[in-house]
Image 1 (tube, helix red, strand yellow):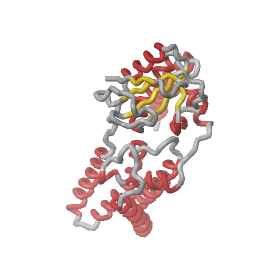
Image 2 (image 1 turned 60 degrees about the horizontal axis):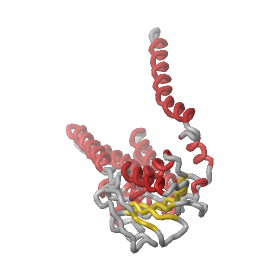
Image 3 (image 1 turned 45 degrees about the vertical axis):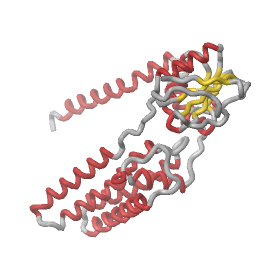
Image 4 (image 1 turned 135 degrees about the vertical axis):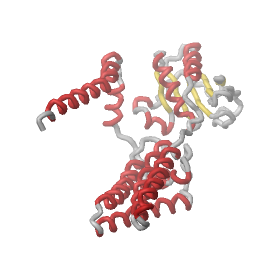
Length: 309
């Protein structure tokens, strides 16, 4: 068409402008910071990270894919998937294969595509779970619930075609609404311990009070990792080097591994949790949902515990 070239030029220009606006903030941050986010992402991408074995990855997919209809998975995954979750995943895989076979037999490309995409998404979900860096947490697996959803949609369309034509459209519409509503409601937020600027400020104040140059950070409760990220960022903005203990190092970088010469140890835990080595320490912060333990190193038994309210 004659007018297609101007329209294409406008669309291309708008797309390039939007792309430039998206990349402008990280480029500015990269230019202003000594180690920008782009550099950190590049270092993380080229670094070696331990993955998860096939059994753990399959467990992660089973829990994530069965979020509809069983609801959101917890932050920490169970050791074994429940029979209901296994049944949902197996039924969705069988349903996807049925969609592929019947779609090919009847030359129905939509049906075959829904089934094939569901099977491919299941395989991608297992592989993706095996590549997750750090522990398998429930919120990382929410998106996998979309894989069986495609199979359910295909089976619903197949069933709708078996009913009288007058009822076909309402059946498909109701099924699509049910799947969409289920997918929207299943991945509800489970963040009961939101990151706290107060906890970060408290850690910075404690580090400055003893003129600490480096801190060893221990995340004693998995639910505290968002707060740990905020505490780590606050300390680094204050010029304090942060090193991370345990398996959480995989979520940071190799140069964050403790070296044994840190001035302070900061431990984040849930209220009421028993932290090894701090059984006799006092803790505060029940209202915040985070208890911040701070102790001077290397004297392990000469620590004090402070809290954020």
